[in-house]
Length: 304
Image (cartoon, rainbow, N blue to C red; front, top):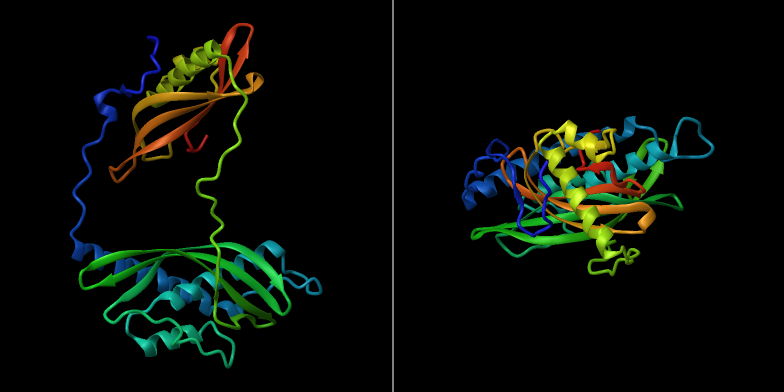
């Protein structure tokens, strides 16, 4: 294999590794329609799961056998997430919303008029993730992150990501929401300074970068002989791209220390199954031994 330079320009892979351009995005009206359909499909699926809460085991109680903490946390997360999707969905159907919220709330808890929007605005949560489950007296509190979309006559608007704490009461019959969710801070530290890795001598860094890029290119081309050579005679452990993804080009490599355990981050451009291209940081572990730099692992995120 020819020696690869560490220049910013990506190595051009064979044409058969390149995909045709992705089709143009749908129009605004089609986007709104698709979003509505997807939101409702997921919403009602989660509602169906929530409706079964009376058949599921309650929140973990040390005095009751058969309620593993992990399973109880998953159940609480599922119920809180399904409820919050309904709570944040406001589409003008007040009666329907009240009925859906009633499937999750304890007796006497009224939440149907609790979210107000500007006239003519419909709101959906297109993605929700439970990030924390905390036991409290009488039940649990689940922190859920929700990304919101708002639809108006002039199109769809990204309403940002919000965090909410959903208070749940636990009992022998399952889980129920006991009060309105309250806002929570997002567990995000964007802009946080990362700890600097130990410096690597310049000559070693250049050599390691060259070897790491060769390894990623060999992985992209499924070149087992090249991988074995770079692994010092034995192929390194390789996790290729996930199934359906295709490589499009290999960019630069950044090497970090310590010298006893070198790691390279190689920029790979990859094509997803739907045709969009994404930057994929490939992690390459290296060993700088007496016989030169040897590749130990190439990790692009797929199955080993």
